[in-house]
Image (cartoon, rainbow, N blue to C red; front, side, top):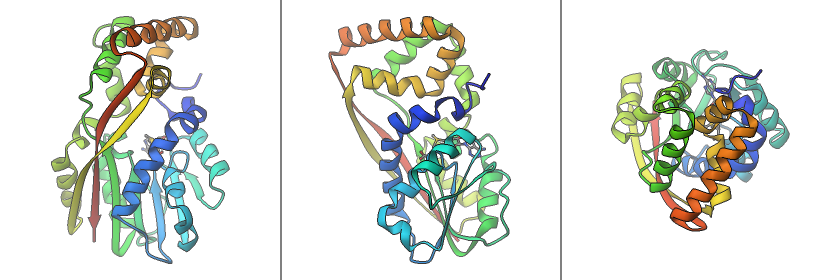
Length: 265
Ligand SMILES: C[S@@+](CC[C@H](N)C(=O)[O-])C[C@H]1O[C@@H](n2cnc3c(N)ncnc32)[C@H](O)[C@@H]1O
């Protein structure tokens, strides 16, 4: 059985439900660090190829674009969506490339998944040529009432405290990288000569069904589905939908901060 922690379990749904949002994030990141013509780009934790898709026409300018990810199923989706992207299954903390192989590296909502993020940053510095740049993004804290309501319902169904504890296994550094100060400090401590950090707000407006489809893919949703099993999970989603509509009406609208960081050498 596939490990619920892996993105392998949600690769198809990710493309349908999450990829458009991650492409929006990718466009913001590429506006912060636009690749110059002829650049070699490495995208860590490339997922289904959001960064390559966010580049649009600029993809043609690049000399090379390589994406690595631990999830084979995510890479299969990326291969289908962006045939030009060279793909390999590799851990961001042990990059199988020679020193100075790339001009630009990106990690779109990836470093939060790593306990050993320092090791990944040191690998990025090793594989970057000089001058070189690394652009990263991470979600800021969720402070909207919908996230709180979802967590309460899920904890109630699965067991008090177990969801939070367990999801921390999937994104152990999410809290750390939700702070712009920590992003800047991590880049400078890793050895980048300069670091620039921006916080922007991404807005979401969707139906209750779309919101729940989104939350199903989150690490908490994956864990809940794993623990409850298919039938009980469907029952949980129905109850959650009814409770959301009663509390909030049919539409969900909120903003979530996003931290963008750029390190240069
Ligand atoms: C939130 S998704 C982001 C995917 C993609 N960057 C995007 O913008 O859509 C996080 C990705 O990081 C990958 N990942 C997690 N840990 C990793 C690691 N140690 N090395 C490489 N990829 C990793 C996951 O498999 C997943 O595809």
